Figure 1: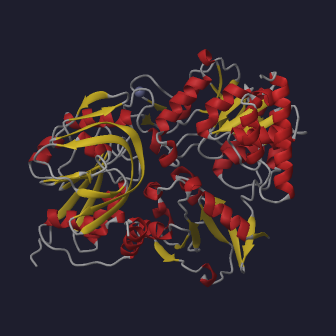
Figure 2 (figure 1 turned 30 degrees about the vertical axis):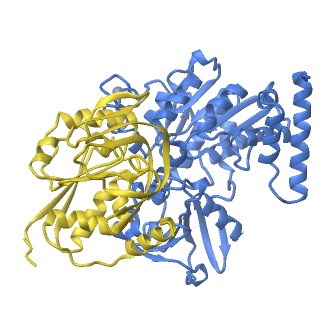
Figure 3 (figure 1 turned 45 degrees about the vertical axis):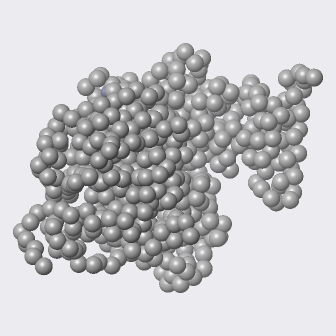
Length: 406
Length: 233
Ligand SMILES: [Zn+2]
């Protein structure tokens, strides 16, 4: 017996609501992924049905997804459906879209799921932040990812939206170039280690001060819709960007969010006011307290994320805490520690925390950085100043749960 | 102990922009630092795309994705690398580097690709990708590491494997890597020398020609921890 599709979707939505409600009442979960998963089992086209009629902006990339999505949601103004809990695969999107039926949706999407989500949701805008190595034991190869993105955004695949893309990341440019409508954003991008060889022909990419190119002709796009140098300019309009959260990489994220919103009719001058006011995103960028310590809790999941954060650590002799796990959500192989320029921490003392603290300590030792291996966290002496705590994914979650807001 | 005080030990990391996917740069750092801590003047030289290959005592080859692996192989075959190896340089190769040194390897849809032919081995596409912890017995030592590759490597008649696989796949599920003359090769990628300080010292000793003084560091604790975590009881 076959059920007509709309009845199937109604049943699936009811199931998602029931499971979400149940897991909230029993406090077993945040009421997001489990319900979405069951909904997709009952109706495989549920995501597509839930997205129909909405204006959706999706955000993907290796670093900055959660923050940029939060900026899109905040900058839009009014009610926006979003997967703010970071559940960034289709089950999480289904749960978010069932929970609220607003006409505008901002969705963070895991890099590997982008092709499927673009196909199902048909977003108005796809924001591509950057692409670098992260959890290679799961995702394998970053160039393959760029190729898959390129296929799903190409004109032939039927994608009709606009791509808002970082023009300084050759892998992102390669992925976006097949799309019909692209807004190229010239934003500062520090991490080039994964695109030294051309995504198109594998020869060396040559980097100059403000541009890059390959002998095969593949080069940084010249038609730039957004630039972020001394200030932010979107389509010729100067936009007063004054974020409340720190980090040059967050200004770049904001530039992409504002460009995406401009594409769906939100004026950059309105969007920036709302984005400037964002103070915290999922526990990030805020001071936390734990056991007499004041912690500046910072999430970094991979070499490029760490590279960006290490340059924000104050240039004095303050202690730094670094917590490294290698669980499934982190990627089980911490080899990437050797791709992080930890030498920047010379002069600091680094307290090594987390399941893989010995891997970290060994890396620091070879890098000439003073370290302490912490086998018992209760024994760290209190310091008068706030301490920067850099943690990868599951370590960050642990410290977020363990600490309280200041 | 005889030691040439003025010797400069040059360690060259070859094409890190193509072959450096899994923290492979760590191996050069570990060799250089462990040599320096024994009073050897060590020079660590990354040889990037477009640069000439300098004379060095040790050349390091890392892992890489299919396209970059092919390009690295092309560039190395046109360079002075083979000649420098024939002249007595030591090579430590992991993952893609291990495959490149052989007669042939397969990438992207089973296309056979000609390797450098420095070692009588060949690599075909395995039936599945191998991603996980790798543990092997090397003489009376244990090698610990992590592998992530899709290769199945067959050794020629005169070629000895580097280790016997205790966990993971290595070349074929039974043995890992190869050891021939001055070439060391393993599928344990990335900072395999950071995880196995004994191996780093073995490589250095073979190049310097004398026994190094023992050295203790946090790397020994890491090695003990990984051995306890990975070795079958
Ligand atoms: Zn090119």
